[in-house]
Image (tube, rainbow, N blue to C red; front, side, top):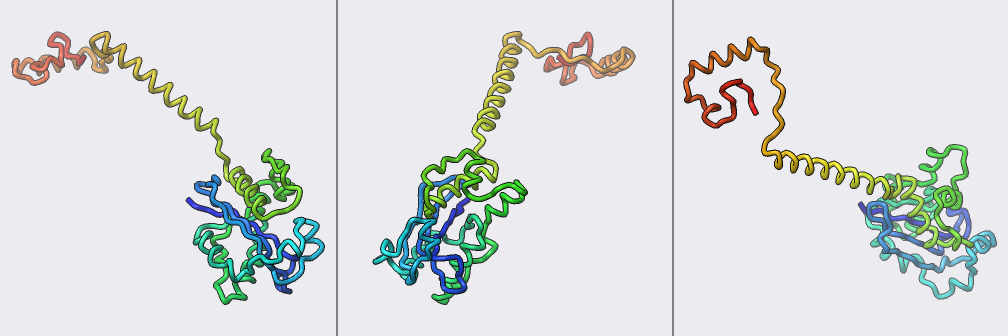
Length: 244
């Protein structure tokens, strides 16, 4: 299963009033584990960054001079995300900005059904708790020491780890324990079979027939003569009528 952890950085907080995306970071996940494939690009937003954005990201207007505009990278971005689910923290914010960029190019908006909001998942699991990306990294003991400033690719990488933990984690200990238990059972079963083979026969099973039923059965079998197939194969002791 392929999913994409995605994050954006923007010039401000208001997509409807012209704020733009200036950085996109994506991390490919296969079966909820980062595959190592990433998509990362800085974009000339064609407008100045707000002071709040500069403070949060450390990126300045001059850092984006000469970077491609969104129109120039949109095809590579769409190719990378494909039709796969998009895992986003506080998804409404990023989706609003992406759809605003798509609208400027007359492209279809993202289908909301493909978006997984980890903030919503975290709020359901930990109601009343802090559920920012940093808080979730602390909760799951994920090293976010490199996150002195917000950055789209770094945040997407941390998000991929958080998402794995929110959805159950790798749990390698449980997997190893299950294999160990299975191997132990197989070993015991093999030892039991070996012991039976060494003894030369299987343990005799206790008969549930009464003595009267046994006698009636023996008398009936006697009428069949020695051609009875179970006598011929030696599966029945003629003296007792019990199977071995």
